[in-house]
Image 1 (tube, rainbow over the protein chains, first blue to last red):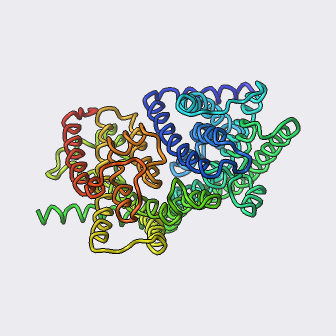
Image 2 (cartoon, rainbow over the protein chains, first blue to last red):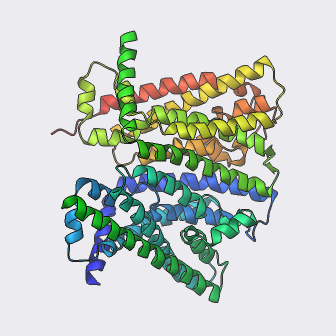
Image 3 (tube, each protein chain N blue to C red):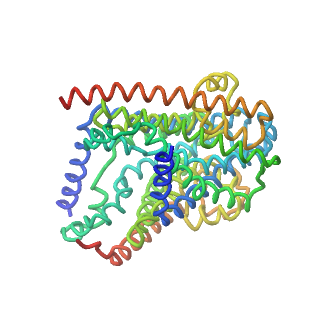
Length: 263
Length: 267
């Protein structure tokens, strides 16, 4: 446990060194937040009640999801793939700790940094210019924090698998591009999933992607209460376990391939 | 001059061929670029699932903006592929080599990589634009055709100018380059919707200081015969080509000043 804590701390510190990049990223996330907020405001000016959302909730959704974008790291993470191409992974796999857990701990540390420094500022700036809905119940913050980390773990589990596809593909960017395109839409980042036509929403409900944006946002906007919060977190946890499990199966297959090549 | 164009073409083609080396990945990336843009357009469709008019504009009219923006932005993005790598080029000291060669610095950076995947995204933007053209009500006149043509060319030029001007930041500070994304990729998102849905300060900054209003909104008012809730002078609807030339001139100047400011990282 102590090992994972240290790894997570290193993940945090590693990203803390790039101050200029953090500032620039906050700026960009905020600009996109403004653009998306104005689009939703124009939408709600014509249709004031969509899926039980009030316009201030829709705008809040925008800035919270914009803030979660970097912590969830949907674009361009291919560190593991790079170690596959360089051959470094062969030694990494022989280290005396669990490979997947190591990267997960690292990623949770990174997400903590990005959550604080890339996630909170766009929300505060958004709150200055727009009317945002802050949770009424103080406990919601705690549940949201839990939900946030589960969302990061779901995102990590998917990125882990995309990275491992580098064992079979010479260039992982293609798979990553297609995956990232699907993630952003199907998770409810681009637009809340509740706004989709009913049939599409039903289909999306059985997929894991909603665990990244829709479910944490349901908690933040207090659209779920009491047992609803527990079942939301449980559903996220379910996807974390399933997806990490898939990643382990894939890792085992990849390792066998590695031995074959290395032998 | 002709031989210089030939050199640039050969440089660019060598990059293009390099991309074809990884065929499966290239195909997937091509599809990914197409999908990513297509999925973005689904957001527009979802919005119009609930309403018939967004701030007075119908789905085909918004698609007219969306399509022209995506189409021309992705074209500019393809020409400027290598701008993303500019901070790396500077940090690694590779820009020194660029300076020693008897070719323009901007041309060399641009031809350093040409990402044909963007054709996938361009195709998608083009399809949305064609859909819009088929469904909007336009009283075609020679003037409208001319404004439409000049709008597309100007849009590509303005986007290219923004890419060059904003990425010049890399010569001053290499880790704050993401700010450029706000105006390049952000510029695409901004021009996908009618300008008047945005707040007044956003309109002033993104629409006129960074003259994104001239990319498609202002000429579209004329082409589609729409009223302007922001009451801008009618003459502005025809000034996109002038603004485009000005943007390119300013961008070129910013690039030159920035290159002069460049200090090698040494070693």
